[in-house]
Length: 346
Image 1 (spheres, rainbow, N blue to C red):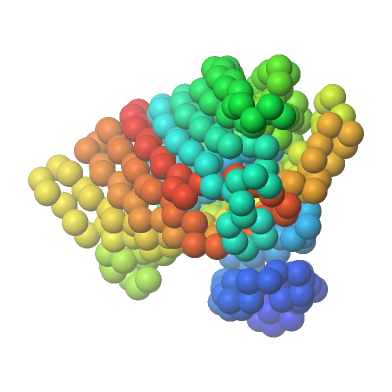
Image 2: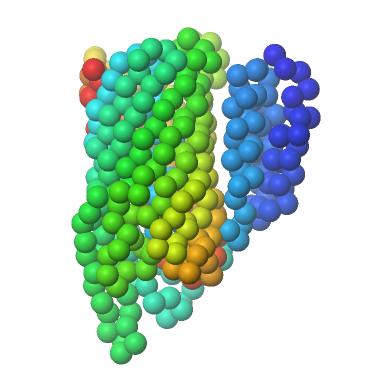
């Protein structure tokens, strides 16, 4: 163990920044308590330091995807490994943004030229762990988006398109413990998605046109030895490093913490109820093609979910319900995000 880790610069800096820049005071207090508790072991201390550093990238005034879809990549028990081997999967995500928002509350629809952004994502993926320490993952998303906007003459324009999204290549290191319950994630988001759809703003395009560095961690453990109740935490930093066409998307950090119960079995079927909190922070976009006055947000969501295992098939589903939205300028928000994943282990 590393005693006194709670006083190291990373923890002190992170908790200081959280208490200073976040208007959501309960969240900064929660994170401070969590960081101090996790600092009890060496491996967890290293992960907490990484999490603290990622949070320093984001400020309140600071969406590559218009729906803030990076949150779909955290809080997902289905892709946390428990041994060597592979998995192929398909995932469906749905978002309907139709309510105009300003800061912490609703705003008149007339204040925003956008009326509806409806998106269905379908992602194909493969994950493979060579041993108990190293693994890789490939995600290939496609998206079907409907964009409705108001015109100067009072009419509405409808634009719908279907295209490839931004592909993600991820690596995993899980050598902190034999059970692979704690791991680091690292990788790239590639500019494979379309970002030139006519009559659509850059922050509403399916692709960002940017190359991003992805850094994250996860951990999950039982509350007590042999307990069916477990807790988990996960965070992922999306850091754009190269943009195109005068547009540079904002830095995004998506985090999750929750509990799940794995003591429910019916024959070969294991059922795991899940309750989690998801927190997203997105910096403002920048560049001549960006709209920094109407991009960037903080969001807290509560998400009930369920995972069903019938080996080698696993089914995961959740609904993500915003309880706090704090947006910059005028933005459309969604009242519910939906995720369904079906995977096959081999």
